[in-house]
Length: 313
Image (cartoon, rainbow, N blue to C red; front, side):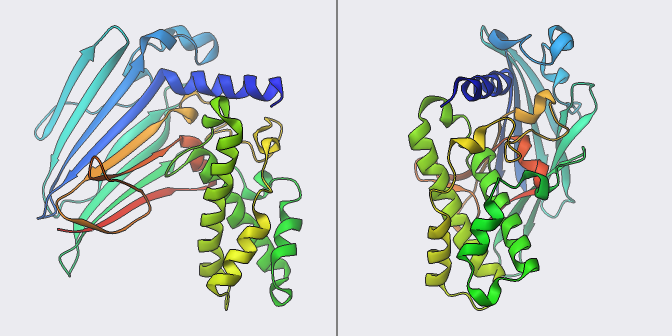
């Protein structure tokens, strides 16, 4: 990897080390749930972010809009040698309206991105959890983020009868979205793995994009069989290398609103539940027995992100 790219990733790593969010949602069989968010700012990296104003960013409320304690809302603070935390716990009744919860602030202290969570009991008794993350800043146009020559590669792998301008363009955009989510999540961002194990991370990146592309091709291209989708995805396999991490490349993630500190804040969401998983786009943890997602707000450059889980109590 070229030094300039390594330096770029190191800067992103520092940015992600200062503040982070860990969200735990515990579902109950009647559709009610407990929601706990831990906001953390680490002391050893305080002052490394935000340019000339970074010295003032030293506590969780500098990075996040924090809820106020009240009925059904508990707020506690912690102070350890390594960081400051604010833990917010909410009890939400079954059938409640959507909960607007997490709010990230930009460097000017204005809302950068938000999340809302909705839990409902379906007619067949299953429970559905949907978390929606939304950027409040203008995002990037997917066309501007398309990696060099990606459109030509997509055109090459499409069957002749599908090589139409609109199909090529839409498929290229979908593939670019898959690349972006493999880099910055959800469900698991691989961007920072490039710092410690570039070759292995690139393998994982290509595997994640391959799986996502197979699903995309099957869902969006009329008449495509499973085997055709796999062949097409293999045609793009290993097409993504270290060039995609070049800061000057349009494919490089920049985060909502450009260079805002919180654009690279790690967000972690986990959901525990009584029962079994029916459907999810998250990662099932066989040890903890829950489902989780991890992402960077840079993922919102390409639009809202939804995390979904359906369980059978």
